[in-house]
Length: 398
Image 1 (cartoon, rainbow, N blue to C red):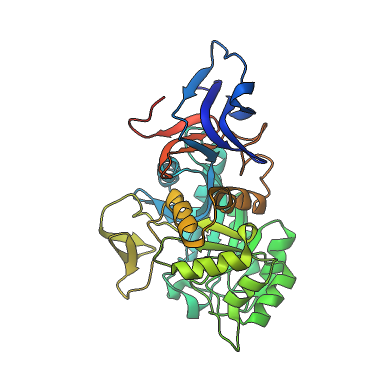
Image 2: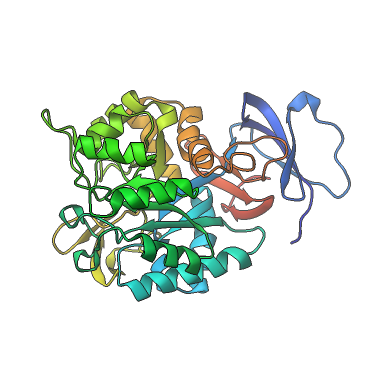
């Protein structure tokens, strides 16, 4: 179905500046044309599709996952357009309307193939009807072997500026975020280069001391990859990466709020310290998301998935099965924050970091019509990607 006009009406709408009770969103050519209180809605046009739902439904902006490796049997490092299409097609069911395709530590040729593929996919992806790949998150191989986690330690190397330049060229300039260990040789040089060239430099899989993280911040680091996981922890005589992430306002911190990677109390601690403006919810999901229990591949390693947990044979956590709407539900339960705050952490904050808040991250006139309709239990009923219905739960009343 091509672009068309739609009117979503009679539901609570979380707009950019206010909440509209029994509000409406008018969509035209993939953009939000107007956001109105119900009594302000004018006549519908003959070609306009009206989506009228139960007033208990809620409309929020599309969620943005800046750290996801795969879903539905596909992984970014498969290096095929079909893999990225599969991921983009699966994500709207959890309310994700855009994402960064995230690589992982592998041998150079595999990473380069995945980057080349993602760069080509970025320019060829369909205009709507599935989640939009906004760019690439390069997670590794510039990490600390001491904090490898599920990253294959035999492929970890020191930060290498020339190699990154080569990879960015292969990716068509679409690497938007890089996770690295700044304390490794060449780390600060790469951080400076990234910051100077509009790429987010993120501290992750790092054994850096508090002082070394401060040096990275001075060089331009502004992000922390999956807070608490894969980093030097908090100690009363050495605050480490965690202490720096919690204390320094320059750093926005990701969290995997699945109840497995982090205890609820640690999520609450981060929320109290960083507030709603300093956190980003992510999934760090792998290809096994949406699939059954079993054994799956992650970077050439067997990952055993059982009852929502993904682990290597060693017992190390290996990504997650988390869905973004569940991350919202969990962060609200763990911290007591409201839905508007959870939406800021999962839509507005990543959009601002990626410097695309002019078109994504909130519901406002002129922005992309990336919309998620939730029921009162925060289950996804419908997702629109740039105005097109990309997911609709069976039985939703329209």
